[in-house]
Image (tube, rainbow, N blue to C red):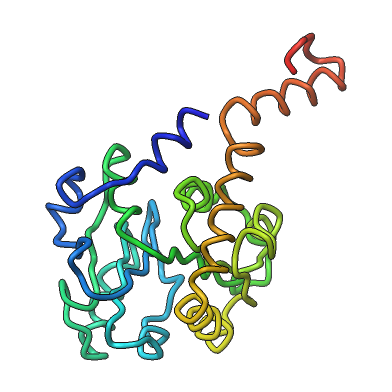
Length: 218
């Protein structure tokens, strides 16, 4: 739909104020950019995982919140140079998000299980944003995320398994063609089942089946 079309358009560095403001590497950067985009940055990703990556890879952690200061401190402790190998652009306005996401060839959602063992619950907005971009997605096959993504749309890993995350990244590096097909499939799935219109149609039909709403939405 229109939203997916807007999110999938080619975006250059000059198109996005977010990219200009945060010094995220543009198309001239000679490596891969991996994005971890969140509304609120919480400690979901151990930066020790970054030490498994190749030196030509840049990691972008977008968002602000309780985990940002700790993540920056951990990056310094690991010898990761900010604005060279790791980027913390902070909170990004919604209108700038497509430009920032377009900087990444690989998008991560390595959500971990809740420490108390309770089921993960939330609206994984970034998953839908990743899908609309049509790029390679690496995500935890966890609860709601595993209901949205499958092996035809993403590289799914066991939550908290650093080795599995590393292997998924290596596959994305070594087999970009097949991973690109996953991204294309994810975009088709987003347009078909996760657009505003499809969600509203499904909700209206469910309410109608319960006798709570009369609709002829198809």
